[in-house]
Length: 393
Ligand SMILES: O=C(O)CCC(=O)C(=O)O
Image (cartoon, rainbow, N blue to C red; front, side, top):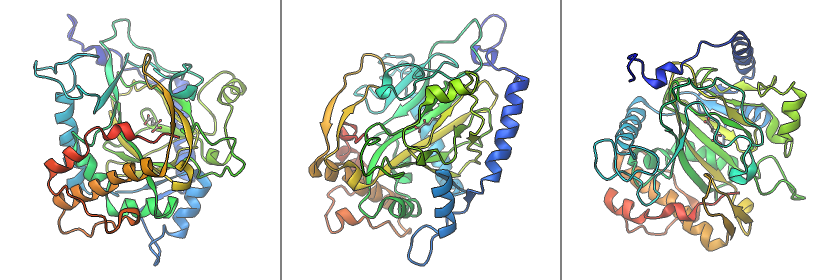
C-alpha cells in the first residue's frame, strides 16, 4: 500500500472502455455460438466422441466442462499458493518474502516476471519472434508496483498436484485420441493474470518449426491442455481465433493492420470457462490474452503433447523466453524422446500414490518398463533437471 491506502495493483484496475465492453460482449456471443464445450465423452473404442472431435477439428479447441473434480482443483490451488509464498521476493532474488531461500534457485520452477499490465513478448524477438505485435490494452497507473510473476515454468518437481493432474487418465485418453498412443509430452506451466497486474500475451501461434513442411497438417505442432483454476471472463480470458489452426502460418502483423491497427481481432472469441474446466487447444490456433485490469484473477495450468512423428528427428532453434537467455540448436533423437516420455510414467506413478483406487492410464511407449521410483520423494528425485529435456517445436 502507498500513503493513499491503495495497493498499486488496485490502482491499476480500470473500468472497461465502451469499445472494450462491446468487443467483450460480441466475443462472448461468438464463443457460445461455437458449440465446442461440454463434458468429456469417449466412444466405445475409447476415442473422443465424434461430436467432440468434429467441434475440435472445426474450431481448434474444446472446453471439457468440469473435467477436474473439486478436491483435485483445491489441492492444486493449495500447492500453488504455497509455491507463490516460496517464490523469490523480487525478480532475481534468492530469498522469498519471509527471508528464506526461495524456490527455483536452480531454474525449476522458473518464475517469469513482467511489469504490471505490460506485454513482455509482444513485438520482441523472444520465443523465436512468434509474438510480432504488442497488444492494445489498459496501461498501468503512474505508480506501477514492482514486477510481478506472470508465468511459472517447470512445476513438477515442486508441485506434486500438478504432476498428478497431468496424468489424469481421462485427459491422457484425449491426448491419445488426438496424437496417437505414442504421444510425447511438451512442457508444463501456469499463466497467472492477477487483477491490476496480469501481463498481456500477444497474439501468436505456438508452433515455430514445421510451417513449411510439405506434409504440414493442422495437428503437426500438437496441442495444449489448459486447466482453469478460476472462472474466466472476457476481460481476463485467453482469446482464440476459431479455425485458425487450419490456416498455416498467419501473418499477424497484416491481420492487425487490416483491423485498423487494433489487436481486438473481430473474429476472435474468449475461452469462457468455469473453475475445473479443461480446454484442449491446438497449438496452431492464433491466440493471445489482454492485460488484466479487471477485478478477477485468472490462473491456468497448461501442459501439452505432440505427435511422435512431429518431433522425431526434428531440428530446432531452442528459443529464449527472456532477454539474455541462451539459445541453441537441438535435434530430437529417439533417445531424447524416450527420455522425455518418462515424465508421463513418473506422473502416472505419482498419481497412483495420491489416487490409489483410480484406474491409471496405460501409456503404451513405456508399457512393461519398470519404474524404480515408488514414493513421491523418489519420483521428485527422478524428475531432477527434467526441464533440460523439454521438447519445443
Ligand atoms: O493463458 C494465456 O494468457 C496465454 C497462454 C498461451 O499463450 C499459451 O499457452 O501458449
